[in-house]
Length: 57
Image (cartoon, rainbow, N blue to C red; front, side, top):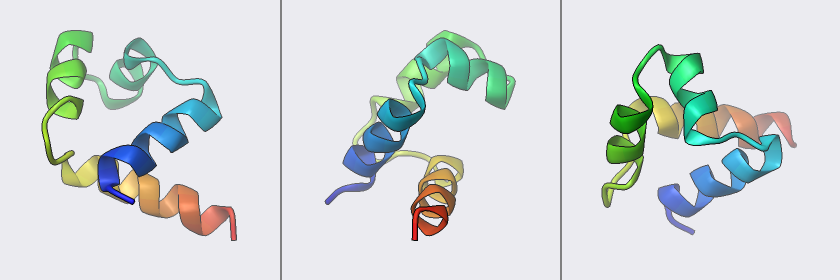
């Protein structure tokens, strides 16, 4: 499973939108949308996925 897919699962689990993630990270919604629609997601998003997955264990 790719990081992007795993991130989308986490996003869906919490019911987050791009607006929500922008508020959490302090970035603009357009910035978040651009960064998360790239092939490889940023390291902060990978960390969030890792923490989320560890907390489910």
